[in-house]
Length: 400
Image (tube, rainbow, N blue to C red; front, side, top):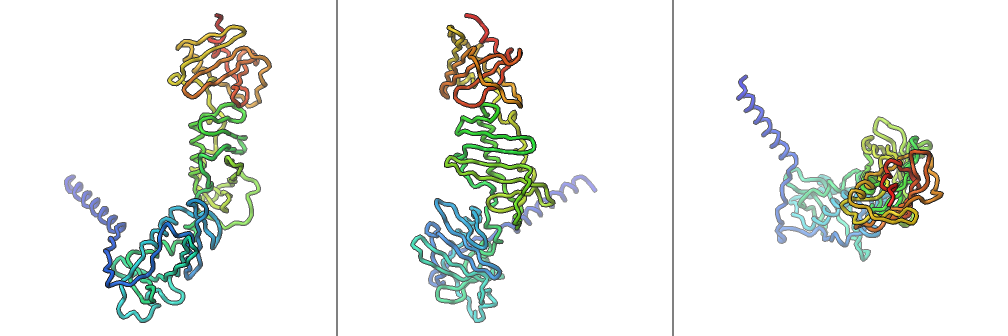
């Protein structure tokens, strides 16, 4: 077959697939209904809805609005509701207002409006008033769904609210394993066979247990990564994970602690126990838990950013001097040396470095030798002592 023919056939195939995709995903736009030819079903406002009860043939789903904009599921189980599912549900209910009467509709069962119907919905507003509506099957033609009007007549309403009303009960469950505001996080602790990683602080100041300062950007990545972990499959289990491979705790500003336990891999994914119950997650989403101090710690011995630092002064004994630009860059290049064993506290201050920058003032004490290759260093703002190679502290050894 000629190349030109192959190219033509390929192009036609692509066009066919594209048209098929459009036909699959596209749904017709609802045409405005003539009020004189319709009957009222109900009228509900998204801002007023605080509770929705959906009675289906198989079960009953109840969701309610708590403090702020958070929704919770009250039945058939309790827990935080998935915000996207709730948004779609509320939108679907609000769009229903009127319907076109179905001529000759005698037997309601054939429209999914029997006893029980496809879905019977009760909506509670801010004042406690309850409004109800009965929904049936989707119409075989047109973008319509059968319902009962407020007067009890069979009508065809625009749209397909049944897709939200008949969603699986698990679809209403929030798949996030942590339900916290990232700005309220004050501590993250990860314990595993590799050891303990604990970082605490807020905004741009974070301290890493056993390592002094933490890199704020990497801490932010860790926090956001944890908050983005989602349950892939919910599991109905009763026993807790007694020997977890990893335990993660997030502590908030008010002292609240949210934990999860990570268990063993299963054919469905990695088993996780969290406040909402049990489920499995994709292994890839847990890669961020396999980190150590050297992954999150700020390796700079001195918090100097040459672009933001305007002055560095050094005091040794009775002498104090200011570092020139080359000296600032030299101090900025000094690095921490990580050691698993705790670093001893400073017993004597050999030199003090004061860093003035657009971010504030940092004061760092440089102490005694640890062996012959390192000195003990401590940030006065907090954190633990750490080691810095003597060869990185040459500027501080200069005499003035």
